[in-house]
Image (cartoon, rainbow, N blue to C red; front, side, top):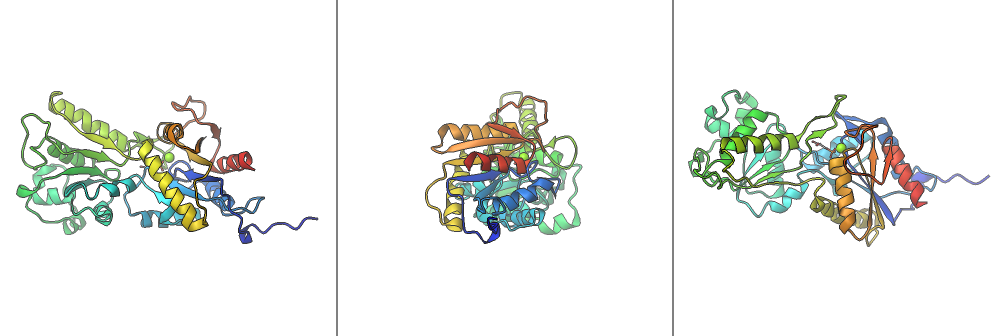
Length: 348
Ligand code: G3P
Ligand code: MG
């Protein structure tokens, strides 16, 4: 009788392949883990027939908190430690823009959390909708700041403030108020609140941390996401400026190839610091639930990357069984555990 391997004691690490996971609709739904996700993480941690650890990272379009805080949440949900060195959320690549703009308006997320995230990225002067409403309560007729928001928002005179760029870090908690403020900035003279441009082509650039029109939350049907907010903003701007205005909008996150390139860099660093592996993996298995962002992006990076990015679609989120995905995955499986086993079987 062969001695069974004790997986957890094993030092074996897979060095030719890695996994990358989307979060909402793959590992978590509405704040609760998808049951197979916990088992899938165990397999990655070495509880597999080869007793082998499998390096992996997480790439979500979600956000609204620091990477450390998000990793804390995910660690609790998946019952094992997840470190910020293996984690990218929608706004993580925005940190590379911190030197480019002086004063930025940050939209989305709970309370003032996204201001703190932006400041943590090195943005020097961060304005929030709360600051603007505190300065002029007439800005949003139906939104009054709560006592908490009044306390946390900052008093400033906006007469001399120039908004150099707008960053939508996370989903808006007040679409009407936030779209109103975004339109005010987009229609202003060069980002000066309270002014109106005659030509509507002087507004600052708008960056969205992703473009998902819908996402998979606790409800049985998909829920509206940041991509829907972006569309409402763009269409309303067009209507208000009678099609004459010019907007500069840009989305980060999946499916942007630049986000996957960012993930590739993070993955190299993670493999080297955590597992002592140098050089790139041959195959990256990306497991996602949204064809438009996860599968589209994985297939697109695969066209330009040197290694093989292999897209796996699961049925626990946005994608609905029986429908034709707009972007075709290399494999479709039921859940994330099946995805991990699918990759393992291909490799071993
Ligand atoms: O707001 C988050 C959502 O749009 C998608 O998250 O983890 O599925 O990329 P995820
Ligand atoms: Mg998802």
